[in-house]
Length: 189
Image 1 (cartoon, one colour):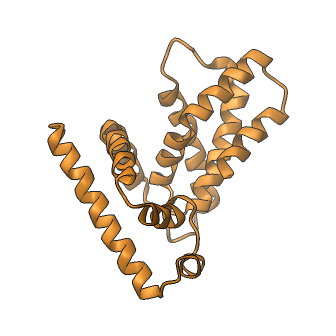
Image 2 (cartoon, rainbow, N blue to C red):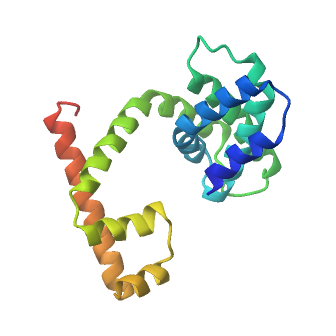
Image 3 (cartoon, one colour):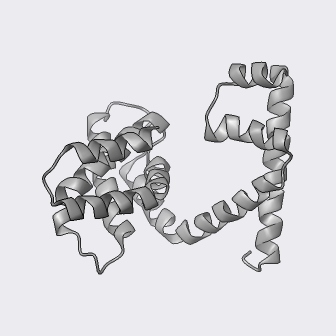
């Protein structure tokens, strides 16, 4: 829902030409998950990461006339996201949850280095999710994709807290093993 808000917010302002606005919306739609994951790897709170994603989308919108379409979009977008993370850090400087500057630079560097592997793992995870039973897939989706609370899931699936968390742990293990097997099968480990 927050992702859609960022795109909706973009369409409210009418500074760039309609063609460039449309092009930006297409690029953001294609890459928004990836951009969010990048931001979330640098900010420890999901809500903050979603806010930064919106600010990044606005900054990209304001500067889109400077984008060179012959170059990849994501490195350009990552620079904006990084600057927005920095602005967020300045605003929240008193928070104990912030990473030091050195740690954040290391995270940025490592993230760029492992991005292809992360994308590959996500692709394989999608395949592994398809192998789960309908109920197991719904359980995983409810908790991790839809972010339902434990109480909501316990009520929906009629299970105790202990059973819920045991089942989720077992499913995480199965999915991890499935992804690892696939990586080995494809010779990517």
